Structures are given as structure tokens and as C-alpha cells.
Image 1: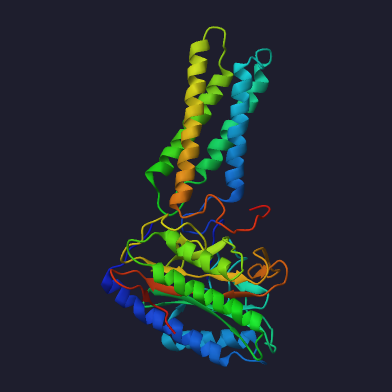
Image 2 (image 1 turned 180 degrees about the vertical axis):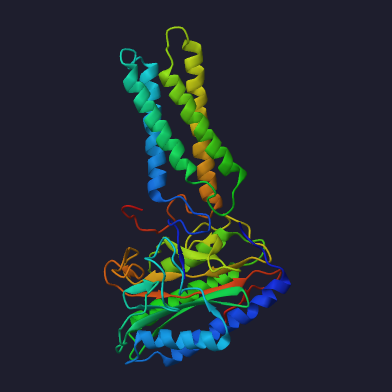
Length: 254
Length: 148
């Protein structure tokens, strides 16, 4: 069931979005050569405790992962692009790091992701990250009342293909509200003018993700981390947005 | 955290590729049996026809049943498609298993109902896929892929 929130409920959701944005900003600042992924997870966990928030990940055990996630942050490095399970890995110069984070604050969930390069960046990695961000911006631009769900997918797919990347539609965005994963599913490709009509009060996570030279993915041995099949690097950008009568509200703005 | 298109999370799921393939395969089997039966292929051994028809109809109906509640919302057309597949499956099964000697008209009527129901189901499922924002044909420039 698709839930439409009232303006008051969207206002109640804002603290969750602001907190998610703050945590990701802090994590990007801290992420550097020599920092361990487990340190990033620990920092995020500490911030959650201080805020009195609740992690959406730590006990999450969906069908597409192996058991409870057990961490509060997704850390996907290089050829890992989604659901990266934090492990004992120290970031090296030039690593492409994607961070995905979702919490519940006062019963409302917000979800966001960002990609960055630690140390010396490779221009190809920066272009990949930039394209996911442009795709996200294009999708947010069309996330307006009266448009269709297919407009969002078409915007993402259009930006990706224009930049020379192919699109994998096996994982996509989703509705957000009292729970992290709700309806509707928000595909990263589609036909403009098709699909569910976007209405004021609809809150969704839009999350384009791309791989440099393939659109094929595989599951890592940890049962969670999604890797590219050819070892190419991936990038992921995400915001939780609320559709209104006017411009969409980026709940997780950083 | 993104959600998979093909998984079955607590949110209502989208049909996976194998479900679609299984439904198509089941419907094709049921239709082939129907055509063969109308041609008299099973007049001498109706047990084979019965088994094949029930198998095909069961696969088609069962896998479509697992689509129940596909996103974005439980639509009227989704229910209609499901009902149509059920009707089609049972009608074809009944047509294939009926004794033809004294019931030719009824057998053919059931067969036509079954075929019509399956066509309606296919149209309903396609409409549902489009309504969910899924590209039903590759977008311009999309490279061809295997197993997608």
C-alpha cells in the first residue's frame, strides 16, 4: 500500500532527514586513507546513540541479504556498489567509497547515500560519481505532483545512458515513511509518462547507482555486498524526497 | 539502501523473471495440449492429455497467483488477470479432459473460453507491468543483454 503523508507528518519527518544528512556529511569528512570501515560504522553507531535514533539496518534481515545486517552503515568500496557490509578493511589511496545510511527518528525514517573518493581521485571515478549525482538531481527535478513514476526512471536512465553507462534495474528506490522500505518501488529506468501518478505527500527514496563498465552484478561471499561482475567500480547517490504541491523537498539534504 | 526488483520484501513484490517465464511456459503447454486435443491427438490416450493439461494450467495459474499484489498497488486489472488465468487454466483443463464423443460443442466452448481468458490475462499482466513503470521494451540505446 502506498502511503501519502500530510504536510504535518512530512514536517515531523524532517529531523530524521536532517540527522541522516549530518551523519553522512560527518562520515565523508572522516573517511580518508588509513581509516577502517569498521571505524566509520562505529562512528555512525555512536552518533545514532547520541541522537536517540534507531538504526534501520542493524536488525534488518530481508530476503535479499543473509540474516540480520548487524551494522548501522553500508560501506561499499570500489567494485562493491550496494549493501556493502562493513568489515575489517582499511581505506587505501584512490578508493571509491559509497556510504548508505538510514535511521528512524521519532518513528520516521529517512534514507540517503553518497559516494566519494579517498585520497587521490581517478577522473573516471569522479565522472562516475558525478553522473549518479546528476541522475539523482534530474530525477528529483521531475519528482513533482502530476508527473508519473516512469518520469523518475526515465530521467535517471537518460542521464546514465547519455554519459555512456548502462543501467541495472535489479535494485532501485522505494517508498519511505514509518518503515525504510515501502511502496512504491522506484525503478532506475522507465518510460516517461508511465506508471503511478505522483501525488503530494508521497515520500520516496530515489537512488541511482551505476557501474563503470558493466551493468551485471553478483553477490559477495558475505551474503550482503553487491559487486560488479567485471570488477569495475560503482557509485551510488540517494536522497529521500517528499513530493508536495510545489517543489519537492529533499529531506536528507547535505 | 536500495530494494531489489525481484526479491520478496515485506513490501508487495514484483514478479521475478522466473515467474514470468514459468507462467509463459505453463500457458504455452496448456495451449499446445488444447490444440493437440482439438486435433484428436489424445483421443486414444486421454491420460497423457489430462496430465499435460493439468500440469500446464497449474503452472500458469500457480505462478500468476504468486504475482498477487504486485506494485505499485493492487489494481483491478491485476485481480482481473489473476481471475482470467484461473478461468483459462481450469477451462482448458476441463476441455482437454472431457470425453469428446457426446460433448463436442461444450468442449470447444470451454476451449475458446480458456484461450480468451489467457489472452485477457496476458494483456492484464502487460498493463500491470507498464503501470508499474517497468519498461516493457528496451529503451533506446539499451545494450542487449542475456538473461534479463
